[in-house]
Length: 400
Image 1 (cartoon, one colour):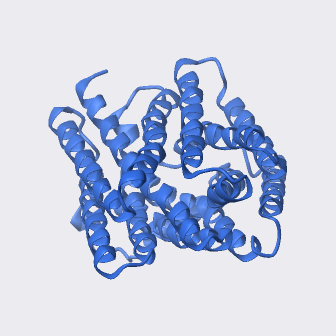
Image 2 (cartoon, rainbow, N blue to C red; image 1 turned 135 degrees about the vertical axis):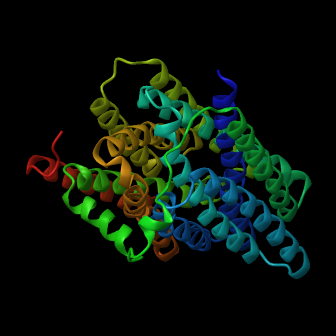
């Protein structure tokens, strides 16, 4: 692999590794502190909602400001927030600091994700996008493989404040890798809108443009509905996995970390298959991944043993990234390149509102009903959304 490509994917890996440590810590530490699946679900809601609400703003910024500058700024600020939050918690105490700093880092992570999304078609111009996105997802998943394991091992030796402080070093390393990419790459990225072009433009205009695309571009609305269904299941899985494994199934935090790691390994195996295979049609990727995620969610809802739950969990998280490759390629096919940032930001917001909603529903109902009953109800919700997307396709809204 070329030096500049290696540096680009290394930055993605290190950034995801640090972000995954934070995502792992919040539900686990909150559940261990409160012994309540409901509070764990509420913490997941507070942690994830800001990162999703910020997608339209971050997407619009990518069309106005250099995405490289935005990406590097987000990584530096995340390092500062981690250090500041760890110090504040050490001085005042309380698990609330972990939730707050993770929510702030989530917004900055969104900016980094959007910047990379805009950069990818330009950095790898001329390459098959399914292969490029599969490689990007592999780097992303390698971070997810090591993130939970690294966090669990660190918690054996350190209090969570020290673990958070260590993630700051990872964010700084990610920024260093991006600096190496910038110095070794010959790619000329498209210039953002000039000051003259922005002068007189109403601040709502980018969002109006994005909304018009969502409503009028053929095929975009069904993609949003499909992805919302998947994220409903992903949200309930992430919000309840700590409570199910360490509570309902009476397993240790190390078992929970191994489960998370196994999920990421399964995803890497699936993505390597996508990267090496050129035979599977894009539509087949979407259909296969959506079906496997639904079946996996049913298994997590109906299982009463760790092995059965693990099989369902692996199907959900493993095929989620296959579905992500499908959706990201389809978005780039549908959305005009000049409006990719602002429109993708709004689309991702609409896609992902169902994920914190799942955490909120877990927080509201897990204390009143069996946690697995909540998982089953949201899995049925995914099925209904898939049916709605099919109706939109058959009525002509979705045209290939």
